[in-house]
Image 1: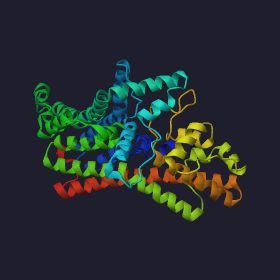
Image 2: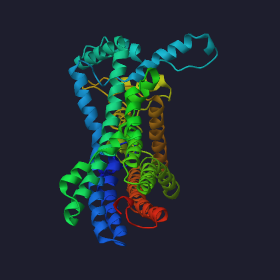
Image 3: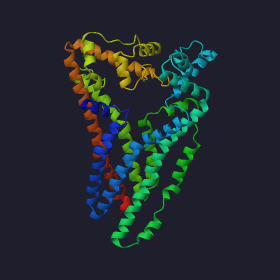
Image 4: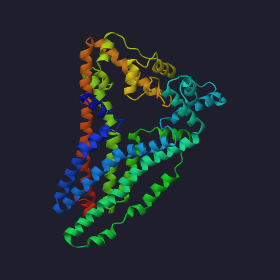
Length: 444
């Protein structure tokens, strides 16, 4: 993997890669160090406990948080395939029926409705006569889901609940009591106050009997999704599911706290972490790109992988880039279906805006986000115009790539500083305000 690939990956705030870099490489070590320093102000013994607890908490939670959802979904998808279902079918394809129904309704008279260019029935009809095996397999998958929609929806609902609930329960309700139990055991052993056996008897998962945990699990068991809501939750990105699990983790951490002061501090820390992980980086990226455009007069909205592509630069020079005629659904779909080898279609696939099968045909099981694809086309077009106007296209592209890469690294740096430096320090100041001490409240 080249440097450009790495920068591209960590610059995608819709993926887990920025979280991976911030959480494991920067945030966890910094939080461990700060926890030790703050507790050392008052007690070396408690600082040792705090360091060990924070190390276990940060790295174990990170491993479950970052890997739990993909691992659970992978196992569930294997189960679905074994049962004869394809997890690739996107339930948003049923939106076609909603558009048709709305068009036929008298209530929509005079309204402008979307043109149907994709959908479960539309895609079956469009692709059913293509003889390629992978296309025929995809059509068969669509037919099975079409004829058993309610069953497939239930599978997708269970998959969503499993992927978000299992990691959340482990991180929020099981890991903390185990961590606390280890501290009690080591303290009992070192201080010779309690026997290990007595301490083991006291190591009960009280959080699992708490009202918060019962409410959390009951709500997950009772959740049922139908129609468009099922479609929405089934198509949430991994990053979205991680945000949901982070909310559940907050509930778990607060309810497993050893006293109310620790609960206050945990709530402060977890809410701050959610904001800085999922909200702040998006706005920082927009601000840096806007600043880069203004200061350096370059268009930096495209991904560094595109800016670094020689074919793309040469095509701009030769004025030889084909693009859809407009941003209408019909023009966009027609283009990606008939111009699969165009640079636009290839980059759209690389940026996961469209999916093609091995045979070269678009995967009819996948839903194409028309609005997102239209924005991508606009970014393509705007960069081409800016580069042509600049004169030296290669120099302009190189400059844009450097600025974009610096922006991505700056975003990671700023976000990491806020998460790994500012938030932990703010947490201990909050701790001092609430408890009158810098010591971790659960360890006093």
